[in-house]
Image 1 (spheres, rainbow, N blue to C red):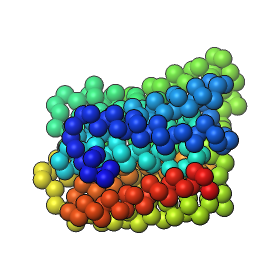
Image 2 (tube, one colour):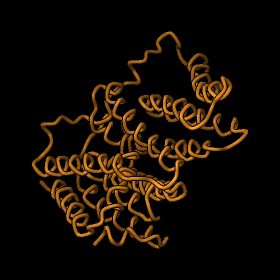
Image 3 (cartoon, rainbow, N blue to C red):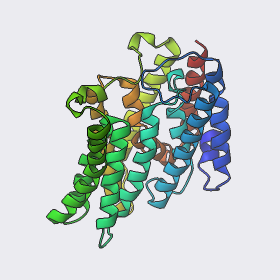
Image 4 (cartoon, one colour):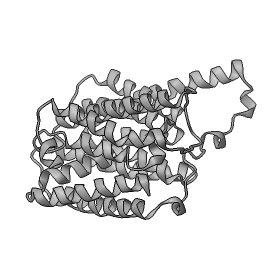
Length: 311
């Protein structure tokens, strides 16, 4: 039922995204999860409210980006639905944390990056992309890995000159320079260590997963494998769409690489890749001719996810 509803291109569906997230986040007010990388206001209800607002805005904005660049066939709201589920699937995610804060900036990066395609006199946009990535990395250090995506994107979608590579690099370094100057003036720069910024965000081991969490995770993994296969075999209308989807796939691979930069914090990595994964899975559900099968797969994920809250 939800898949059919969210396949609509009506803007009113954004209201359903908000309502769904509100329902999913009710258990957050009764859980006592602890994460190491919190950005807390000191008031739990306010933390939860801010977190919900962030995820809602991210889901709606990501769907806007996907619709603008036709990354999912026939405009729909499936991307916002999947993104909302991915950011609500475990109780440990019901905390205001640096990964979600950084994802907000990365979404802005994604939109600006796609704007570069076919744009002349693109230096202002590429500088903005680098600047935003630098800010995202300062919020959550492993996000620095996405700078590779910028240079690959330029090489893949255009015939860049050396200036095309240097401008985003200058933008990328700008917030880092400001940060180092701040540390130099107000702190001891000699104590600066990269290890301080590669900490775990979630103190969770695989043993912490209950049976419902495992059923959800395995089901999601199966759907993701099918979605990746669908991405490779389905023909796309337009060179631009195909190339942008290749960049989404590269974003997914680089996001997985962040696992080696966060002390193997698999839940933080899960949130990092939630943006490309939402696009890939939404594409899969949109292209499924048997809607009833898509409904069953999604219902399975939704039920096992909710059961995981109370197991």
